[in-house]
Length: 262
Image (cartoon, rainbow, N blue to C red; front, side):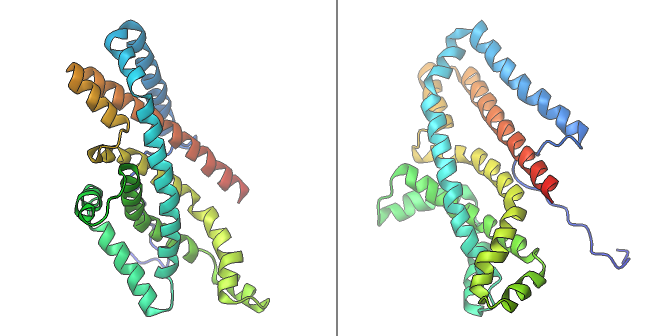
């Protein structure tokens, strides 16, 4: 490693879709081909072969709604958990810092699928949790650990002078954090939160194992009744691709506006 007095560059790789940007011509062009190609292909299949493709499309809309319910519910709860975990990770209290750090390390070390099974089946021996609630809680607990690191990094990215200035105005540390630091940190963490939202949307397909009637579950039900496995999973894959690319574009627009405002 060559030390030139500068901080080393940090390479960030997320689990979500690549965010298209006009500055990246290759990725931006690929996004357009993938998104519009998937829409056109899905429309062509439904029009040229109504049976089974159109039938599949009429069978799974309620699954799309459930997928969004799980995704939105999970991301909202994960944000709350992540903010608490992030604040705990930067706390000067060794006990609070230790608990938050332990949570992050343990949860990030256990696969989401295992957490889903554990919450639904293992804890189900002691308390019954509804299917959708189980999915939302398990995914929120898992992604809350990742959100915690996002919030920690976002808060620590705010110059220390901001805290010092707030304290000099008579604010307590808690007041300065609530009114000065966290609002600025939210602007910093919005893009990675958007990326985590897309990753969570894709991982929501795992909740089908809990009998939650999401897109994948509805597709599996249709395929088991008709044995049209190829056609069904082709439609499911195209729907996930379209939804994921759509939201990745929205996040790209959001990032551009945030950067333009800086």
